[in-house]
Amino acid sequence: MSNQPLDKGRVVVIAEKYQDNQGNDKNRYATVGRATKWPNQNGQGDNVDMEIDTMPVNSSGPIKMYIFWDSEQQNNLPQNNSQGYNQQQPQQGYQPQNNGYAQGTRG
Image (cartoon, rainbow, N blue to C red; front, side, top):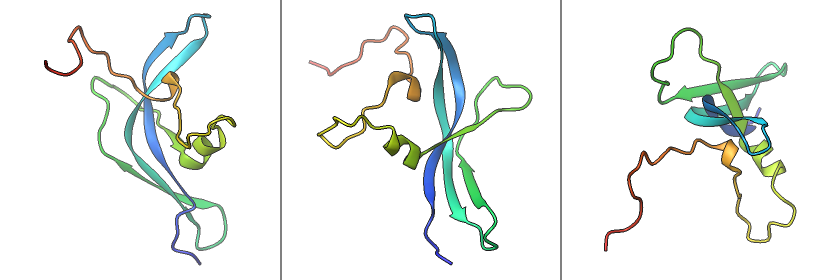
């Protein structure tokens, strides 16, 4: 058997629900850890290891987590991306609000 992982990804939770300009429900996700998919030694299914780095605050009850696999993100890249980098859509990652503070460099 191979010691190489089958896939890697990030473990996320829904940080915010919102509606886009067309009124479609969307989610913003916050990354809480990493996931690695390994081949099963018995040949039945795959094993998934999750390393959780942080937990959402003010949560009560069960927490639903999702895994965004790197291989799935690479399969969803636009075909005309000639620069070779992944242009993430805003709904795929958590975008923190600036809370009224100005961002930029000091002059």
